[in-house]
Length: 276
Image (cartoon, rainbow, N blue to C red; front, side):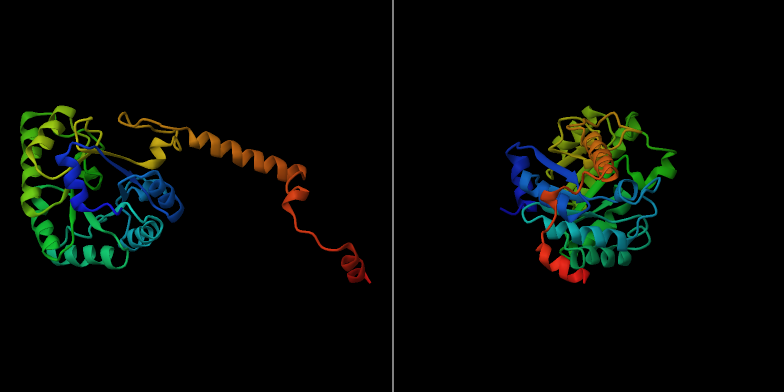
């Protein structure tokens, strides 16, 4: 059964936890879909994980459409959410609606996600009026890395916490169907989750959100240089891949791969006639 916004709302009402993972390609989408993950997020985190940028800021609309289309072809049941990249919605309401439409029309996303609270409510309202569902994102918003002075936990003071609580209510009133809470204290995330009727998805926001999201390379242990505090590595796929690459290289250099069982045959008489 295809996961929809209505599905997620019912899950919140029934207190059934929602699962979301980032995804950027067809083959991974197929595996996640087979596992039953409800939401696949084509995050602008692909700037870090796929394209090798230091942050998400260089990611373009073309990047997002390309990867969203690949994921949408691989997942038949999961809800597909695509990030709106930096400067695709901040410049004007018109740009926000136009670019959201491209992610739906060309990328075949089901929902678009944009960062920010009260300051992007006008964009959220306009996008939803165009019949495009919106997932809002507040707290530690990576596109604001320069304004924050780094990737810092948000909402720790009373003033900052009150602002995030108000942001959550404002984006819901503007029409957002989902809300990602990133990098905020767990008790604040729990209060926000209780205060809004739309599902909340946490990342570094504690266990009391309606669901959770992780970058899949993080939860599979594919990066070892930096592991955020909120990440649990559910497997060490990076080590397995590195060993497989090394084993492949060794066998190729030794001449043991490909072995006879990996090759195609031809009648020896044909080869002899070809030599003549």
